Length: 170
Length: 190
Image 1: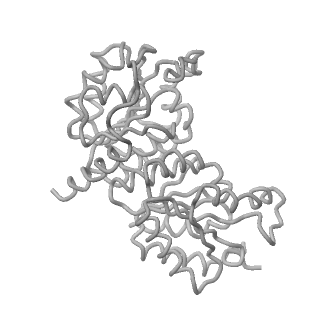
Image 2: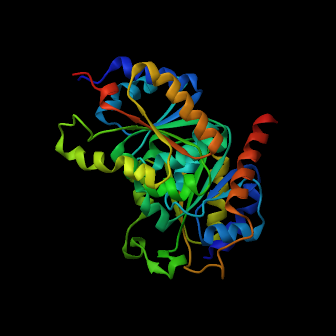
């Protein structure tokens, strides 16, 4: 499977450097190495979800508990989380660090991913969610740090889009 | 059985717990008994009160967490029940007021009114201890046991579909949220 181990490790290490203590996740192809890293890390609370929207509540609970968290999901999982984002994270000013795999964009071969790819950025903009791309190895650590800082200072959801260039080796 | 009587019967037990409620009648009635800084009322995001309780319980394993859920909310997040059962925090009690109704929008019947069995669903999801209670004394005993016990428990409390005259309280959502977090941080320091 050509999911980049190097990029996945870099992302995981960057999350650890931000003191992320809880990670919620729903598996998708690009996220497998990241989820495995969390599973093998005894210091990380990994919560495997049935549906991504649960992650909003779990991250809110973690925030109340004083634990920094992050959410790993596909863009379709982001779409499935919107009510939670609006009527919990936005309404109650809950910081969320969302790492979203950007499926269905340039280079996508799976037809079923393409519609979600079209609407991901317009919906992030419509929701007023600050977002940036993770697309180059050299910028991963800094971008994750910056996103985490903004989520905590603004008390709102912030998204990082994990791109094909970073996550997929072919 | 009235939800307000149930809440009143366990109110003293809630003092040393972190309490998360759903929106609507549950929030308004608990608030009417006397707000405390360890109560968080999730006034929207139906379904996510249980996920919030799970996040709290996983991060604070020594702290008892109680979620006051409802049939309508739980039916919106049945997957979350499987997540809760998967991690089964020992000090998490999940109380579901089942009035078979979406009361706050005018009393439309939920699927529990036509036979959906939330206790059965919770058990089949893997929640290690489940019960259904139908009177206030059984409720008080079941909830008190759950708080003193050391196992994830889901209690279905069958209550009447009646609620308070109004749902809005004088506690703003953000005030409640910041106070709740500050309270938890103060517990960690002491």
